[in-house]
Image 1 (cartoon, helix red, strand yellow):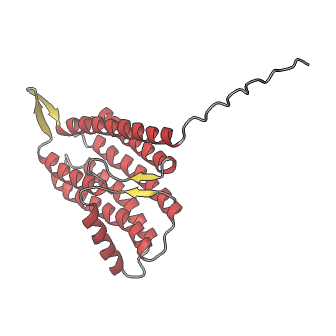
Image 2 (cartoon, rainbow, N blue to C red):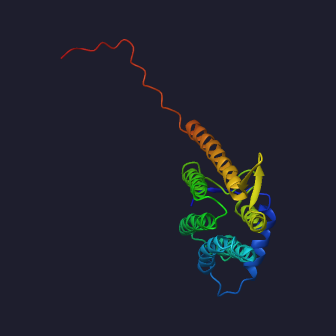
Length: 232
């Protein structure tokens, strides 16, 4: 696909070096499709693990392992293809993002089923994430820039935040807000929703302006002076 990848997350540079080093050391029988399959299977596993955290806090470790497996498969499949000169840009772009959407839905469903987040907030969070994702995918084709991070936070940083949050919320599910108890994930989810909506608005406004300037309205044809129309 003809677009520029804009990845400016905090860990982008060292992560890229690490992924290339790992890809070069993988045995020949490991393929990009196998790594993609790992990424696909790991997110439903993460969702199931999160759903059980309230009943067994130690399952937070299983959730972290599932996220690590997702990082391994999702981050390495494209890197391995590029290292081996086996890139399939359209196929990779499409499959990666279909899996991302399905995986996010599975993960947020696990949060809603855990009892640590109210389902309406989980659904609003998922809708906000899909809103940003849709705008990003549209911008990739219309503007030619695929942004993988916002405010220094990319997929890897998000996984780290999720892992740390799962460990914390498994032991401290409640917080005090103005003297009233509230589920920590509800509060975090509302903050995330506001942040995602802001990202959507800012990104949509920026890309709309860029496209407006790139495609100005054509000027109207000036009427010819001194030409008298004759009636038939």
